[in-house]
Length: 434
Ligand SMILES: Cc1ncc(COP(=O)(O)O)c(C=O)c1O
Ligand SMILES: N[C@@H](CCCC[NH3+])C(=O)O
Image (cartoon, rainbow, N blue to C red):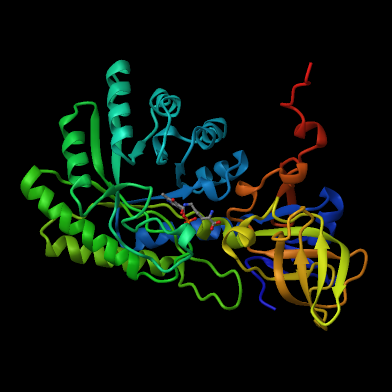
C-alpha cells in the first residue's frame, strides 16, 4: 500500500492523516468528508517556490484556485506566499473575503462578464489574463469609463496537443481558449493592446492542459512563444516582462501514474526558457506558473461510510458509499481512476475485488471499478486517496445531496474549514409557488 504525504497507520491500526485518526474524523464530522493534509500542501507550495529561488529566477507561483477554492485554502496560499489564479466572480469574491492581497490575484476566463471585469478593476487586482477580442474591447471600454489602468497578459494558444484526456486539453488550435499564436490573432490582439494607454501589457500566458506527465508540451509551447516574442520585439518593439506557462503538472492518482517531481517540471521549463531567450537575444522574462492539482490533489482524502452491496453472480460485486459523483464527478467525467483503503483496517489483506458505487440515481455514478479490498463490515469507512483537486470544487447537489464538510489536519489537530451543507441550505434559495 502506498501512503501519501503524512498519511500512515496509527497504533490503533487505523488510517492516520496529519497525525489525526481518520476513523475518529469520520465519527466526529460525519461522512462523506474531505480531509486535507495541510503539511503536504505547504510542502508542495514551498517546493515550487524553492526551485525558482534555487535557479535565481524571478517568478510568481499562482495557486489555481479552481482546484479547491475555499476561504481557508486561500488563506493558506497567502501564508505560503503564493499568488492566486481566479477564473470567475465567485472565485474572486472568495479571495477577497479571505483577505488575499489583491495585487497578487490574476483573473482568467474565456467569457468574463462586464460585472466580473468591473469587480476586478474596482478591486485593483494584479493582472487580468485577456482571452479574446470581445474581452479586449469590453475591458478597453471599462477602463476608459473608470479611468482605470490595468496590467494584462494575453492568453495564447500555441497549437500544442499535450498528452492528457481530451476534455482537459487546452493548448491545441481547436480550443475555446485564447488567441491563436499561429494565425495572426495573437499579433492583432497585441497590437490593439499596446496601443491602448489604459493597458500595461506584461506579456503572454499559455496553459496547454491538465494532468500532464511530461515536459515536452511545455517546452514546445515555450519555444513557439519565444520565437514570436523575438518577432514582436523586432516588428512591434514589444518586450514581454512576464511569461506565464500555466499549470497542468500531473500527479499520482494510482500506481500506474508516474509523474515527475514538481521541481523537475519547473527546472526543465526554466532551463529551456533561459536557453531560448539567450538564443533569440531576449531578456529572460519573469516566469509565472499556475499549479492547481499539483498543490492540493494528493493532500486530499475523502472518507465515506460503506452501505449497501449487490452481487451480480459471476460478474461483479457492487459496494455503495454515502457519496459519489456529487462529491467527485471526475470518474464519471474523465474516467478518472483512484485508489482506496478501509480506513479502519488499511493493512488488512484484500481478499476480494469490489466496485465502489455512489448513491446518485445514475448508472455512471461509479467511483472505483475493480478495487481489491478486504471483506467490509457494517462500520467500515472507505478512504479514497488524492481527491484534493477538483473534488470539492466540482461538487454538486445532484439528487439534492448536500455537499460534504471539509476538514484540515495538521500536527495532530483537525479544523473544520467548510461546514457540511444541510437540507435547509438546499432549499435556501427556493421560493414557493404562491
Ligand atoms: C488557465 C489555467 N491555469 C491553471 C490551471 C490549473 O491546472 P492544474 O490544476 O492542472 O495545475 C488550469 C486548469 O487546467 C487552467 O485552465
Ligand atoms: N477539472 C479538471 C481539470 C480542468 C482544469 C481546469 N482547466 C479535472 O478534474 O481534472
